[in-house]
Amino acid sequence: MTKDECKQVVLDIIAEIAPDEDLSDVKGDVALREQLDLDSMDFLDIVMELRKQHSIEVPEADYVQLASLDSCAEYLTPKFNALV
Amino acid sequence: MSEHYDVAIIGAGMSGLSAGIRAAHFGKKAIILEQHNAPGGLNSFYAKEGRKYDVGLHAMTNYVPAKERRAIFNKLLRQLRIDRAELDLIEQKSSRIAFPGVNLRFGNEEALLESEVERVFPGQIDGFVRLSKAIRDYPDVDLNQPYRSTREWIKGFVSDPLLEEMIFCPLMYYGSAVEDDMDVGQFVIMFRSIFHEGLARPAEGIRLLIRVVLDRYRKLGGIRKMKTGVKRLVAEGGKISRIELDNGTEVSADVVLSCAGLPETYALVDSSLVSDQSEQAGKLSFSETIAVYKSLPETWGWGDDTIVFFNNAERFAYRNPSDPIDLRSGVICLPNNFEFGDRPLKEGLVRVTCLANHDTWCGYSAEAYEAAKADWFGRIQKSILPMMPVPTRDYSSELVATDMFTPKTVKKFTRRARGAIYGTPDKVKDGRTSWDNLFLCGTDQGYLGIVGSMLSGVVMANEHVLKG
Image (cartoon, rainbow over all chains, first blue to last red; front, side, top):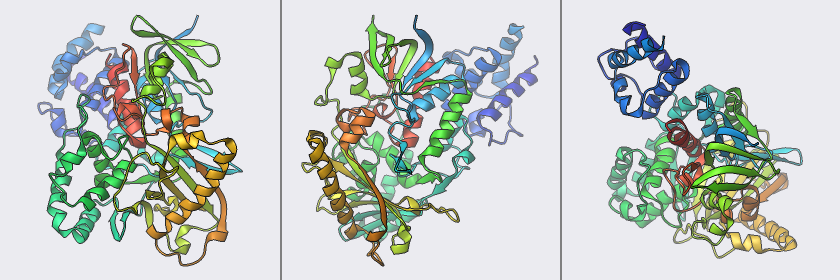
């Protein structure tokens, strides 16, 4: 999986959690919280959906790694690639 | 061998169903155990003589437009993956706080109350605006915050005791388990949910909401056992190891979420721990009358008020009354007066909720109980008249059905200690109990009302089932 594919996985999850958000112009290097109406409950959902849909585990101490799309890709891409 | 689950939830009320949805959505094997036939718990429904009734729901609080994505109501629906359109919500017309000679109207537009306060209490408006802002800026619920008295806190903003009482009246009636006071955290939640946000109802009433939530849980594969009361929670080694059911079978679960209430849950572990007389049992119980009329209240001039929170005493008293029912204050709900547009309810409904004394109602003999109900029903209908517009015609002959519940009814159907629907005054905000895998959910965790209880289910499932 490439980092761009990984970003798309995260965006797909956000689209499911928050169907009314406009995700067409999310910037990779800006915190998701600053661009979208997401709160800690939504971030928990991103973590839970990663586990449910992709068997990716994100321990609570690592939640900060999910702050922006870029940091998500940095942190999650190796985890996805380790699955195969 | 008993069947084992990831999570067992006691009670198919709004909090239990919401917790179940969260757990089941993320693949947890969940079971909900409900003593009754009908789901909904404190917000439920029944039919009597072929007529459908709602119980609990006057209105859903926290109503905001769909575009306010940060608002609690919309967050909650997101967490439950429920499409708002399914709830078919219709807004209130407007509501009123009615005290002797003074009225304050409020609606789903926040500005209405502010202009009313300015009109009636011109000297207090600056303080009221500061209060409203302080509430907006108040930190979101902290699960570890201890109880703090609002009576002290509010004096920093509002100095007219009449305005103070008028603000308290609706907020207490819609969610205080404490006599004559509220926890600041609770007060802030209620103020936001009623005055900043607003009131609405599913067009069809509570049935629709319950059906939507239940369908969601069922589609996720959640298991639900109705008419299956919990007899005992068996504690071993600091944990709940087994759940014994009334039907003689048992189940076990990694996590048990109990929506039964704090003293009620402890009593399921060890009945010697609590009783109706214990400190943990709430002191506030209520009665409600429902009068069904052939025509709609608007036809006799009662078409403007959705809810009227009234007090006709010199001082508003929100406490367990010495009389069987306290006629001095209460809540009048006119379910017809939501914005139904071209699909009005077929019959007119007038519901009146008053504080009532649990011990008195439960102490009556069967015969005396029926007599007291008939007597108080009539007195309640009369007592609300001074708080309402003068009827434009005599509507009394159009009464087609009545019903009334008392603290005894509440106790019987909910098993709440002392019939206290708002539960214990000391909320357990983190849901933790003396047993490692047993958590409270719903009323006694601290969020009240329909939206509050659903949020409680979500938060407790997130904290104790999903994160754990």
